[in-house]
Length: 413
Ligand code: C6P
Image (cartoon, rainbow, N blue to C red; front, side, top):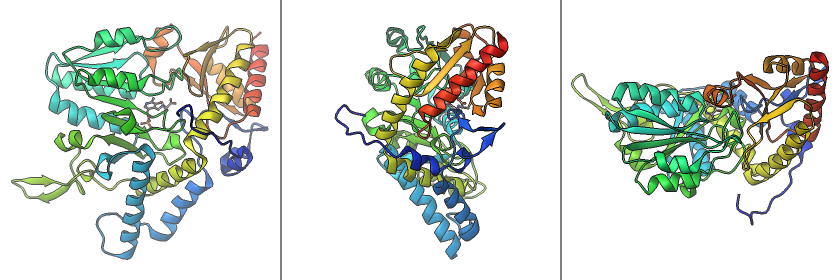
């Protein structure tokens, strides 16, 4: 968001009405859903689109000449167009539909990575990556003889940029960095990271899983080479996601999985591949999921990503302040530039016990290592409790969280 972008408050009551799941009791308390980093709830606008697909035009895409198939293909490709506009990609060819962030990163590792890396080359990641942005590169290193380098973080959970610059070397072939950390909430200075890498002609992949639901993303303004995200954290269905890639890079990459839809001709002695984006989309995809993703994008676009970012920043400030008054609670991840993720530990209470007690109060959070074990190692802790915000959370939700945490303290006193 730029400083002069006008922010328009949205009607939080109306937004909450759109999410049926929020209106229920869990363990005799109104549900307070603060596990949005794991997956976000779905508005009725998305649920209705899924229902309509299965009731009215369930059919395979890109294959049939019958009316249902044409309708399904049209809606599927319309969703691709919405995704393109949402992230400001240059063309539809640059929008590859995958099963999620994990699949998108693995795709780049196994195509771009295997085609371009050799022994002695380096891939640069950071200490705050999700396992999805670590393990695919480790597998690639085993396959190619390349090695993984890791940019450290400071005590607040911010990247140490001097170390990043020092680690960018003549051997670095790719930089892969999380846009917003799922375990710490840190918003990384991705534009600076990209510009520094590009100065050495090194491409950059961003893991945007935790960014797209919370702030505007413009892949052209960022000038990133690859951008990966999942629909389910963006109020869309599970099992769908996106790989954005610059067209020239995607054109030069070999396909990943082989099968239907990704080919032009198949003969036993020679197979030719389809054009982008289909070259990377083998097999029948999650058709309803992609159409639902389009509906989710319509939903957040109507509210406005700048407005969502602004609303959540206010809620994060309120939440961080409230948590700071709880005795024995230490927040993990206190970066200056942070999104709506509050990780914490409490003296004398294991995070899993915090999670269980909170559930008894109807408060849903995530506890554990959050698929970011190196972050836990960095802070010498086994796990954290994590409350993660979305556009429908309120100050009342934070108050309920604080009350439940006070109760947990009493139980363990
Ligand atoms: N993080 C969390 O609770 P998938 O599973 O492919 O949709 O997303 C993987 C992923 C990649 N990068 C980041 C930064 C993520 O946060 C996630 C998913 C969830 O934090 C589940 S582990």
